[in-house]
Image (tube, rainbow, N blue to C red; front, top):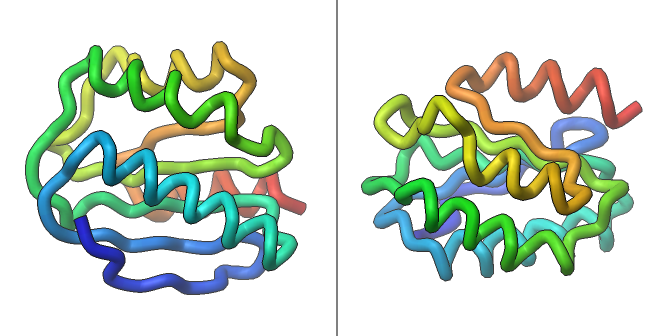
Length: 122
């Protein structure tokens, strides 16, 4: 998984990734996102995975939430934008992360993710 771009969006940062989707890589990338947000004083992050290839099964998503939730700063919101093929309607990773105190959501629509972050980071 490769970082394609990083943009400051006024209160949150947007990270776009491409390449092969991998659980360990997403966890590392998410923690790098956290460090960036903390160092820049940002209150939110959008991780755009629409240009990545592959999917994670529901248990991998729960494992991902378990792996980053203990490290995540609860003051920083996290939105993921997924390709429709990556979407799991029951949102197991999102729910597992929220149950561990993270303020996170997954979206299929980039504009909705941006609106959610902008409404909550001010």
